[in-house]
Length: 442
Image 1: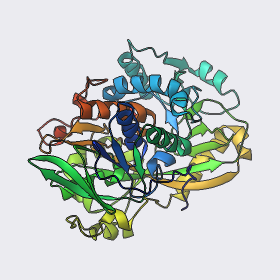
Image 2 (image 1 turned 90 degrees about the vertical axis):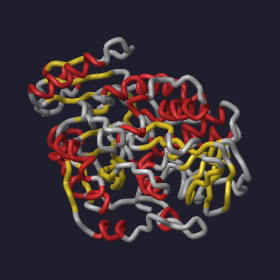
Image 3 (image 1 turned 90 degrees about the horizontal axis):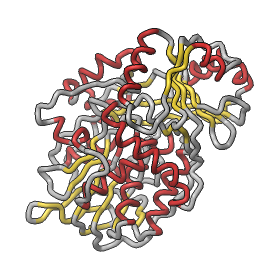
Image 4 (image 1 turned 60 degrees about the vertical axis):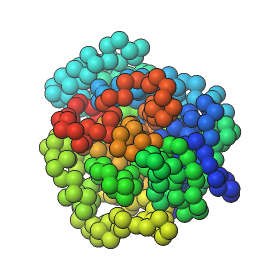
């Protein structure tokens, strides 16, 4: 697999006959949910069709940020920042987490105004976000030639190592009694007396009272099998990993690139604004849902028509439970990156920060981001299917917020008072006539 090397997690051999909760999807959201539930004493099975953390949870930039978040995510991300501070001790593992700060450069007056408006949303939270003027920005990056009128700087923001975090969370869940089942795709849900009663996996049936779908980019296909409409598309981000380099400690976003210092001394580099979107049948199936997002973000998307359209057109959306599901024929989404986009980002960095002229590319990879129309996740019960919950659609924002998203999901499953108000994350907003709003953020 050309993607990044993830700390291996060996799945349990024994399939439990029954548990309290089955969590579908071994990314950071699913693993965090499993940990939260297991810590409360519930019997949990975490089912992953491939390996733990092998999709976007290990392919993201590694940013842990509250800055530039959609205002609807701010309360949950504030909780996440608190969780990250003690996560290593809780997991008994090194996640590489550090509060190194994140800087968002402003290249025009509109960006400055947008960031100033965002600062108003953060009032009342223990976060010291501030606007830097052009001189203060140059003091932070004295050797750069970045044309910035100012910047948004948040010292509480940080970074962690995506290839380490999700495996560490899954192992912690196992220490608290959770079953970690890899190469164990869930084909579907069975119900009895009108509510969830079990899941059918490729290895057999697991009886349960509740199911959490944290399937990332696969979630829409899974829900379609159960006559639930979840508008969701995939966007591909292309990433470069460099060899060790003596460069800036803070993560930096500019129009042409984004960089993040890695624990190994290298850097993660990607475009600050370009992503690929393959045209597939779902692009047309959910076109109306995504029109507001397309109008807002069309400059950042590069559309591509190719073999992926036909691959997805051939997918069986009504598979039988006693036969292999589409999840068993594709264990890991491992998209080919856009080398052109990644190289443009690297070229921009080299031009504007001289130390990067010494950078050596160690690896390229692509990551498949699951997006929903308003770029705000679904963390919700499914009213029409009692006992079924969804935690997906994090739209490229899931890594940093993941531990808190897991806590909120667990709260909903157990009936505990939610850590934050979950109203903005309700699944029903896509079907109850609610207006789809695209708010400021990244």
